[in-house]
Length: 458
Ligand SMILES: [Fe+2]
Ligand SMILES: [Zn+2]
Image 1: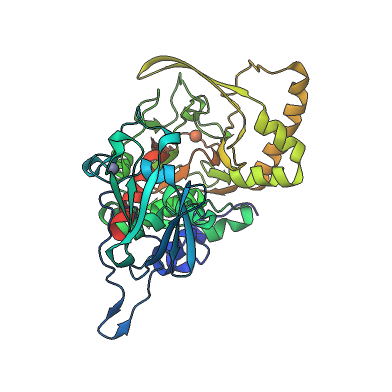
Image 2: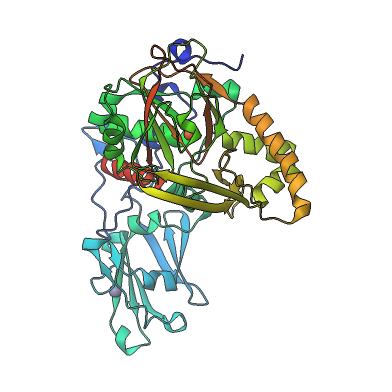
């Protein structure tokens, strides 16, 4: 019952059917969604959403109607305190000086700070005067105490300041909306709910579809794109729509067909154990694009297997914390030796199977039996416990894996830092071949594209 067949359960999903998607509320219905961070000017254009033709339109919480009713400096002269309607906001004086938006301090054309930091002295930053200007729409500060600061004035628009609020809930919201939206993890039973499908044509043509695909990829880690032409260039076209292909030592686009004398087990027709690609890269390619051109006719061969590695890691963290600790703290040697189009390679990178960030959040999963080195550079006592923990990880991984078969024209897109994937074996005869073209995209480019689309449409 682990099997879900895309051809029977696959539906054309849209975001309208999902109430749980983090972007759903942000993109269309949240009245408190902040506007894009405008770094070009310190003033925002008037909000067109106040009243139009007698019809009341939903007002944003960052509406220009909000006004600064009072601006003061705290007793240490370290923070400027603003009263905005009934709310209180504090901004560190040193941060305000650092972020002066005047032409001497900030170059609008390149959205860059040009303040001379060689002369920036935290202890000598001193605000001499605080004023509310522009009918409560802006804050003006006059600096002093240094000859070079004499008469230096900074003006900050209220909207600009509110978008950079230091309140915890505001920074959290900014990070979710503009830095990286949170993933929604899923186990085997959730797959039917999370799988989204998009049309290749629409993603290439329509910015809204492109954005929804990216949002689904971030949320669920795997998304299907249907209806790509059956030619070998389509992964490149999709990658170019986002940014550009991430090249590796296997080249830019790779062709997965059974081939003899191969440099990689993926090119064999035997089962391909569940893995993440290229764990031996420090900067591991972020996202896989796998375009199916010809699928094996064999009814039971050549199926894709995929599991949410973040979900598996969370299961481990919750139920087997010692195993989680071993897998997240033990550096494993990953390696790849061989030669391909780009010549000979000898890659090594050391990283845990479960990589977590400073905040404890999951960042990356590494798992590849063929590419886990026989060098295991850890204290000898660590070895057997690590193997036991790994065995547990693999057991849960298989329990939570789904399998399905892609059809010609499908491009399966999934996160290579989160999902663990594999393939069942197939019989490769003249009448039963399989032909897949793959390429990678990096997450930096995907997130960047999402922000560009979001800023243009919000
Ligand atoms: Fe792979
Ligand atoms: Zn300035």
